[in-house]
Length: 225
Ligand SMILES: Nc1nc2c(ncn2[C@@H]2O[C@H](COP(=O)(O)OP(=O)(O)O)[C@@H](O)[C@H]2O)c(=O)[nH]1
Ligand SMILES: [Mg+2]
Image 1 (tube, rainbow, N blue to C red):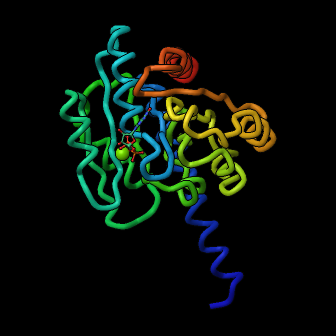
Image 2: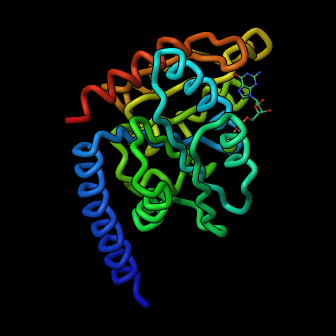
């Protein structure tokens, strides 16, 4: 197969996915379900951050919460979310390194029409493939943990450009990681994405979590009809 045909096939797959994502986003805006996609490398703290964020939202009276847990192979994270008493659906991609609309639609249907005010997607642990695939979310965030190093902004630029917010996680490690250059990270990230929101958080100490919860609630208010 020549190279041109391969590129055209990829383009049409992405275009079909984008159309399905737009329709899904509009339907959720109409039925009152705010949908947020959470992307990061494996171990950056996605599950832990979601649990901490859910705690803040619950303390503010939010009850109808749901999590779609995408995992390459296991149900470990879905079980952690269930243990916290949050409705969750496991989306096992059987080795596929991104989530696409057919998967999101199936996972959403598994909630059986329950009224959900905040639905979160823990995307596959990967900073490359998910950048291409719109998941129908109203808001996309990416996490970068302090132990990963600030320079990942130069290694995965499409992901930084594709999200609404960068959440720096595990900031309790900052005293141990003196080479983590927060100001260079912020500067480079905003060159890639001038409207990027940046939060510095620790799920362990709760630093930055209230500000993040404020922003997530404002995102819901801005996106839901
Ligand atoms: N020190 C510290 N460790 C954290 C924090 N958030 C997550 N972790 C730890 O990082 C590891 C991976 O977290 P997890 O939420 O499973 O990451 P995921 O793979 O992105 O979902 C676990 O051992 C967590 O306890 C944090 O804010 N501070
Ligand atoms: Mg996880």
